[in-house]
Length: 324
Image (cartoon, rainbow, N blue to C red; front, side, top):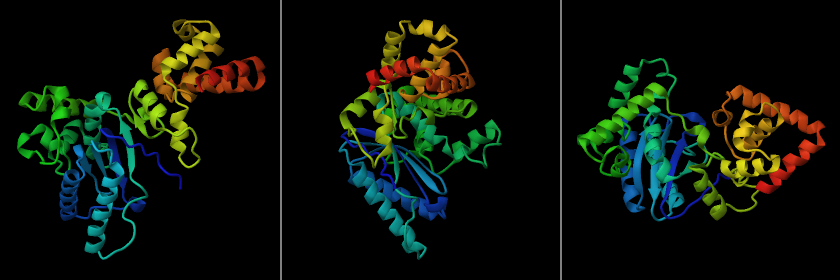
């Protein structure tokens, strides 16, 4: 099994998830959930973790946390082993409780802390059982879901002792009645419009601006690794600004001119933004002013042309070399 990408440094922010083995339940009743939260509270104090939010589902959990000491691995090792020991003792079982290693996404705090907290808090209504529920039913369910830190964000009488609410609520006016109201309004809007940031995660491991991803790539990622596929995916990632600059130089056109093109040059832009920039078809379409299917079809046509056209192949190779 390939090792997941692990980047640790002081002050790093992570979205951590862990799923039950074979997608089976990791909580059988409220006693298990309460034990889990008690251990979580003990752990964040012992390991000096800043916990911003959590959501417990039947077969997995979500945490949004910051590590001032750069010790995510140490904390998660203790936490998962300790809860697994409780679970195995209580149900007279042995073996793994979780499906492999925990998953952690490194997050740029300035850009994504408050948005990601909302994304995580939406999980209870992002299930098959709730997908056909009305908007009012979903909002009511979230407001009454007991195994989430959301309640403490919208009602100060339900605050948990181990949660740092201030930094998230700062984006909504602070820890005041108005700040909590605005946070709940943002959640309600997310329920109505949908909030999905999965496609913004680069290499399945990093969520942040182009400059943040470049900083992480240049500072922390090994140049080569056969064991960690995510390193290869993030390593080859270039910011869209870098790609556009090189592309414009090689084809002798501005990006506005490229966007107005309907042939090979625009297809080249779509292709290198996808392959070398880590952007999705939807994101590229928004940049260029076309729909997702046009991006997909354009990239397909370019691949076919590249096989036949030596000049095109050489030009793309030059762009790839400039960005590598």
